[in-house]
Amino acid sequence: MEIGKTIKALRAQKGVTQEQAAAHLGVSFQAISKWETGVSRS
Image 1: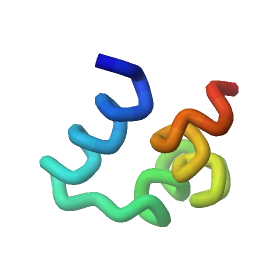
Image 2 (image 1 turned 120 degrees about the vertical axis):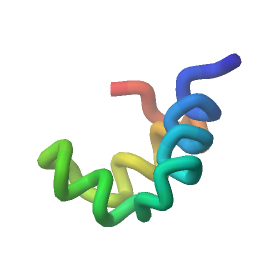
Image 3 (image 1 turned 60 degrees about the vertical axis):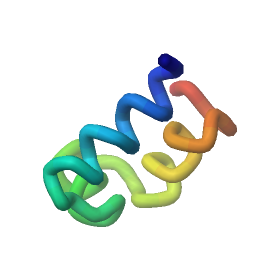
């Protein structure tokens, strides 16, 4: 499974929004979106 799909699945399983995950990780929600879609991996 690709890392982006794993991130999305785990986030959804926990009921966490992209915004919440981003705030916890100290990144933008756009970064989370890019990771999940495979646009960016860094």
